[in-house]
Length: 126
Image 1 (tube, rainbow, N blue to C red):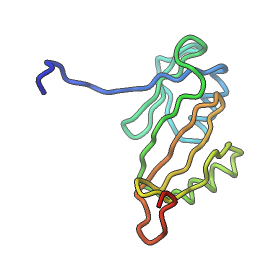
Image 2: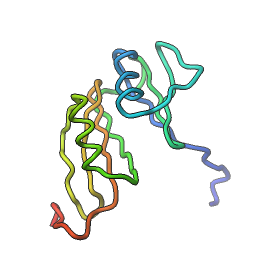
Image 3: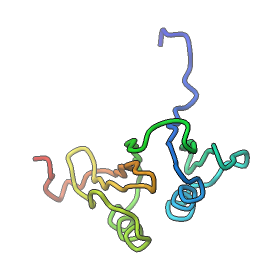
Image 4: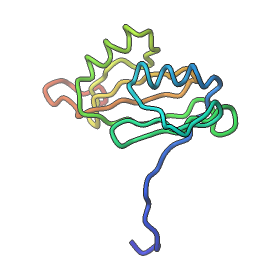
């Protein structure tokens, strides 16, 4: 790389309206952990060496889309999220790029959960 710097990490900042409600979603439903230094206006949440910042009112816009690639059973995750009352925008769908599900968080952000496509099922995009 010729640009002269090393990227340490990239962490999206999501706008939240109600920090307690957003933390309940990410911590209790999705299993993220909250940083020790966060407060009611700005904090960090993480899981499995990835993370997000949550900012109350000041940064970002509602409706951001985030890709979350994972190695797991998307059907089981879907069932768990439905049982918790999570808004599913797209149920698990087998595309050529991923087996994907789209979930809406309490602030309208779309989380695109994706795992490896299933080559034994038809692809929705073909």
